[in-house]
Length: 231
Image 1 (cartoon, one colour):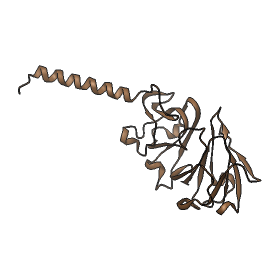
Image 2 (spheres, rainbow, N blue to C red):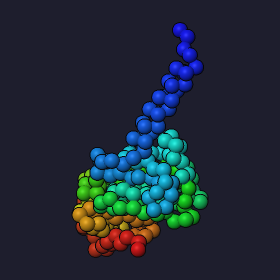
Image 3 (cartoon, rainbow, N blue to C red):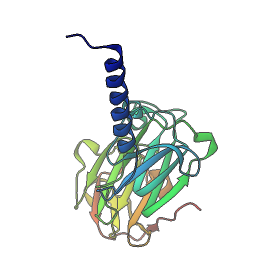
Image 4 (cartoon, rainbow, N blue to C red):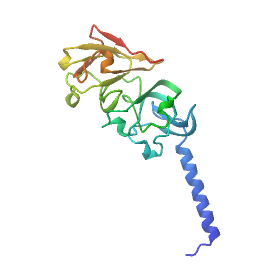
């Protein structure tokens, strides 16, 4: 089969146009279907190239967006990390940017964090009205995680492993040492206008590191802490 140079050139042109159209469709936010989504932008003020995330993304280089983010828009409770795999296996020079919003809003990252986001995930089920307790092995909601939706008197593999935690939903949670005993602290979420979240490191609540081993949904402790967002 012989194709003239003109025909080949036309075929290549049509292929490039189709590719660009597909890329543009995947890079635009039209009507995110999930309760949580995060739009990543390469410039401040929600400008520049963008892509929309609706699921855990442990390596932004997989979608061509590693070390590019300067601003975000979206809704839900999202964590952005400066290393792949949610800062797993990294203990120094790490940071987590926490973005929480009940409805669509936008946020510029601090200048010192521009172009340094490498992985992204959300807290809980993705719906801030679902009542969940999420514990993380690392500080600032990094590394491995476990989610609980009901009373648990034993955290199994995550027993004595919690360094940070996030709650979603309207209910407070009481965290304890082993089997609902020892130190106990009631944690209350903040109301973001009909959606609730609270996020702490263990030292923020006065609980020893790697000591939380059980939890109950509800408030059953004398010590009560209500989450207050940073202004």
